Image 1 (cartoon, protein in one colour):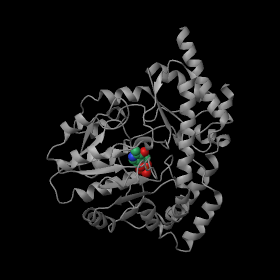
Image 2 (cartoon, rainbow, N blue to C red):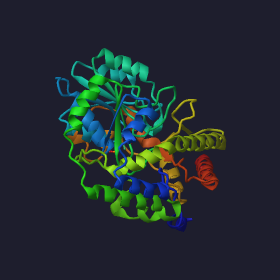
Image 3 (spheres, rainbow, N blue to C red):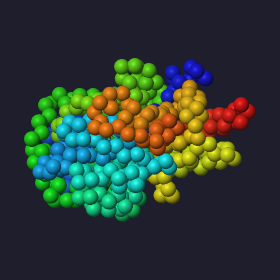
Image 4 (cartoon, rainbow, N blue to C red):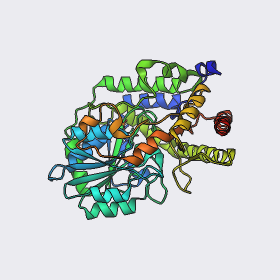
Amino acid sequence: MAERQFFRFLPPAGDPIPFNDILRAALDSSLGDGGQFAAILRSYLATNHCYLVSSGTAALHLILRAISDETERNEVVIPAYCCPSLVASTVKAGLKVRLCDIRRNGFGFDLERLGELLNPRTLCVVVVHLFGIPHDMKPIMDMVTRAGAITVEDSAQAFGVSPDAAKLGTIGDIGFYSFGRGKPLTMLGGAAIVTNRTDCAEKIEKYLAELPKNPLFVNVSSLAKVTLYSLFVHPYLYWIPNSLPFLRLGETKFVSQFETRSMCRYQAALGKILVFLSDSLNQGRARNSRFLIERLTHCTDNPSFFIPGDDFPIPYLRLPVILVSPNLRERILSELVGKGIGATRMYGVALPRIAGVSPHLFEVAEYPNAEYIAARLLTLPVNSLVTQKDVETVIGVFENVSESGKNG
Ligand SMILES: *Cc1c(COP(=O)(O)O)cnc(C)c1O
């Protein structure tokens, strides 16, 4: 068993980018094309304004700078379990991070805690649709609007997801998407900001105009990255980058410094082609998720886990499984990884415990639900590389571990 992972390892998230699209985008961008990506996104997402930047981190940073311009408000509320780059975006804009605990049954805000946090200095609340799980926006937006603040939708993991008529990211006042590695639609970098509010759009445009131009090598290195990624994301090659310690593929590191640039022309040209794959990628993830959920819920009489989300067929970016105990999580995780399945702990710990984050926080309180989830969360791959055999492997591990749990 142990040797298997050196030959086949299923990545936790990510889908290959077709090589003919990679080449076509190179040709298009060298001919000066790619300019229509923002317009295509506007129509795909049904939103009035769309702006392309270099990363999701840069997108939120730019949004925060733009909306904090002419106001004394300086507090940004983010969930206590989420991507640490939200802290970097906020701190670099000179604003204060206020963490809000999440619910015990998922990743959404604990609305009671949110109500206590909102105050006249609240600039905005960042709703994070983690794994593509849609949050009920209405109650949050009502509270935020009443507090005179702005709702920002972090849809980095939810591109193209639409539980109702509107797509996630376009419901709040401002939203953003990331096209980085491991996101629903990847170009190994780049991001989009969207809004239907003209006043917000005007403020954002002012900052966009100041962004530095991309030199040619940014496009060339983007093309090189996309090509290598598309090759090495395949399970029979993925073990190579996965075993190179300097790539640190599995880790979430907090990086306080980042650049804010516009999206490079190569990524825009590639995005223009790939956006039409988004729906079928999401449908594939929804199908794989549903199948895995059905198999998992039938594999033991006494379920030792729950899966956040509701009836809507969610195209989970990775399937989040919350085990009953941290110990069980660790046992299942190591079994799966040993069998070549890219299961992960996601961020591993609540936001204040990610190395390097706490000095940037303006207050640290108790976040019991974020801690609870962080210690028990396991993610399972549901990307387009998952095979029937992988599903059987996952089910086998869950069955085995629950059995051995019973006996001892
Ligand atoms: C990846 C991610 C970001 C940051 O996007 P980058 O493009 O990697 O900078 C922000 N929020 C969430 C939830 C993410 O998953």
